[in-house]
Image (cartoon, rainbow, N blue to C red; front, side, top):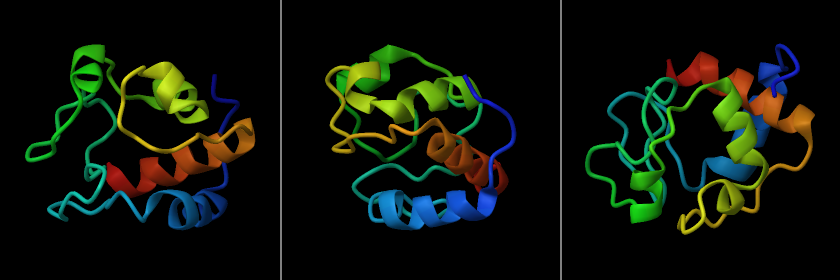
Amino acid sequence: MLTGIGDAGKGAGIFKTRCAQCHTLGKGEPNKVGPNLHGLFGRQSGQVEGFSYTAANVNKGVHWDNDTLFEYLENPKKYIPGTKMAFAGLKKAKDRNDLITYLEKEVS
């Protein structure tokens, strides 16, 4: 569960070093190895047009919000068994909180 507002500046650094190689944020930007994250909050898993998801991701049916992202980002493969996301996760709650705070500002 989120512990409050994170540090968006620190979240930007986490995104740059841990996420940007696979994901874009801006509206209309292309998918990479991972889907574009614009409009992420409130979207159901496996729904970005033009991105090839695993059945596990599509069938999970999770709606992304602060709490679901907080849990997912700790261990994506545990949260969605069968996902092709090759990211081990962010073990520190503060890092996840900071990243989600940044994403809220950038993809809404």
